[in-house]
Image (cartoon, rainbow, N blue to C red; front, side, top):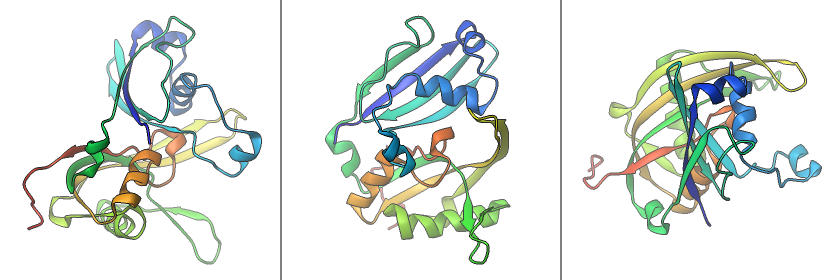
Length: 214
């Protein structure tokens, strides 16, 4: 599987011209870097877009966004806004056993009775949710003593159809140990959890040589 890591730099002029004032503005800017190759049916079936992003923030002068994609992004938006720097991810990068990680997630559970998605609230509850989901669904386990829930935000914005969206986000970091490499590679390449269209789910990982789990 070919994967490309990129950094999308936006200067003040680009941020203003592209009207990046909220999560939807950033979503539109990132999505404009990738021509949509999905059919209407694939979109309806929630087929992954083939790319993920994580907002690294910035100040009033600039902004930086990390990208992971299965195809090359455009170098700029409309040939003039922003700058994208890309490099392929080597095949052996995902073959390590232990990584330090950071990720922004949308922590939710589905209520059994109503079938509605309910946000997980509070740092301890989010940490426990992450620990459970990691082993059940994502192909790795985490060390509870080193797991940190750093920042919790609730984003509110309107989507393309002007519907009000509320998205809970939590930044989580720690150390993970791969249990199932195939599942882990899928989690890395397709993202984890919900909210991936709005900047959640991109695992930012660095291999660790020493085994803190031993």
